[in-house]
Image (cartoon, rainbow, N blue to C red; front, side):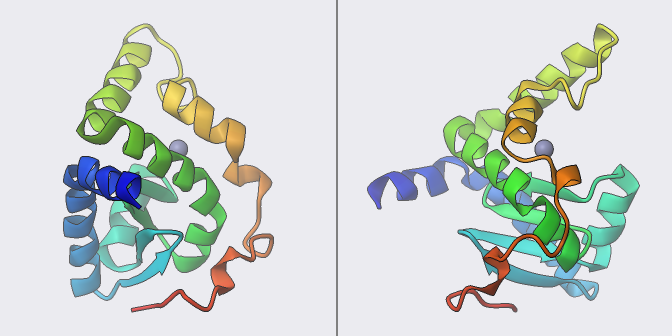
Amino acid sequence: MFVKLIQIIWTSPNTLIGLVVGSAGLLTGGKAQIREGCIEFYGGVVEKWLEGLNVFGMTLGHTILGQTKTGLRIVRKHEQVHVRQYERWGPLFLPAYLGWSAWLWMIGKDYYRLNPFEVEAYAIDDPANRNADSDDSDDGIDQSDF
Ligand SMILES: [Zn+2]
């Protein structure tokens, strides 16, 4: 419990960014739900923004952004790996992640898939190997949509 509280505080600057983006989604017709200790946002401008970035999902601290509810189900396990990374790295996560990607881009490598944070996440779960029906974690009774 104490460790979890420290993790929530440690990564709260990242979570705050996610809450701002997610709130913009809610104000533009998007929705939110609580899953596995995170607030997930989808639809509205969140969907448009992720479409523009050409990604299905993105983690910011203890928030996960997804284009759609189904998309979130597909990427959840992968994004939860990033949540654990945020809990370890806290406010250093985004500079470290972006720094790795910038370095890989500068040396002409795949700045996304060869990023060590993505290598770890894809080793645990590759969303391309999943489908929306294979994950039953969406049905817990303690979870709420809002
Ligand atoms: Zn990832």
